[in-house]
Amino acid sequence: MHQYDRRRFFKRMMLGASAVVLAGCDKLSNSQTFTGLLKTGESFSKNARGLLNNPKSMAQEFSEADLSPSFRSNGTSMPNSAEYIALEKNNFVDWSLEVNGLVEKPLKLTLADIQALPSRTQITRHDCVEGWSAIGKWTGTPLHEILDLAKPLTKAQYVVFYCADPMNDDGTDKYYESIDMVDALHAQTILAYKLNGETLPVKNGAPIRLRVERQLGYKQAKYIMRIELVEKLDHIAQGKGGYWEDSAGYEWYAGI
Ligand SMILES: Nc1nc2c(c(=O)[nH]1)N[C@H]1C(S)=C(S)[C@@H](COP(=O)(O)O)O[C@H]1N2
Ligand SMILES: [Mo]
Image (cartoon, rainbow, N blue to C red):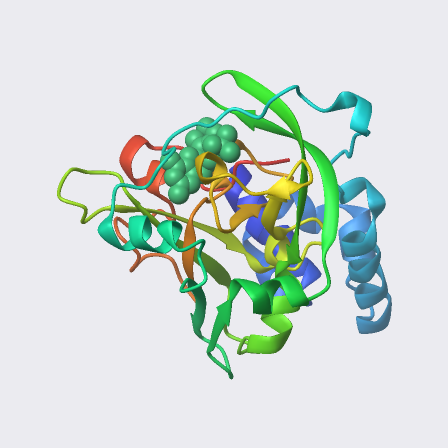
């Protein structure tokens, strides 16, 4: 199986899908472990929970001593849009995050609303495919806190992040990324508003940027303006789920 398909397979397993998913997957359906696991619904969901809570599925966290002296910027360092420039000038008090799509309760959250929710701090390593890494301390709101408020419909499969920064001269093509619900609900997936204990700098994605720690740098969307819950990704831009996926053929799933 292709890595992406395997990933989808495990996701469906963990979300409690039926043996139908196994039909096209000879290797795994013949294996003892998986057929055993599927024998009863009860042991299946126990095992599924075990997989989700397995600490091995956490990205490595580091100590303060491991922090990089500075966390460089890559890609956009200052979004070139009149809207963003105005928001930044006013310290993002007029900024708000929209959460919509396949949710029961669409939201519009100010930075203060987001910062009033429970927070998580984590020291992690960022790996960019262009050949550099940096260790930073991120503080932000777990994405699951925000999704709990928005109440995704059961058919929601992906979370799409729409960013403020235009990637082309006429400003029509802004950065975007997407993740699946397993990563969206993961404990280390946060909307970060601090880096190394300070307000998140513009060069690193102010006012909020995604940290999805089991994946590579280009998934870590900066300058987030809107979050959309969707069932499929094929109607988003060129259909591959992210700016670099669409424009340079990067893998959609960029992780372990
Ligand atoms: N909105 C937006 N998000 C983005 C990018 C970007 O250009 N625009 N670049 C990506 C890439 S390739 C990397 S490596 C990281 C860089 O994050 P940093 O600027 O904090 O180092 O952001 C990712 N997220
Ligand atoms: Mo990157």
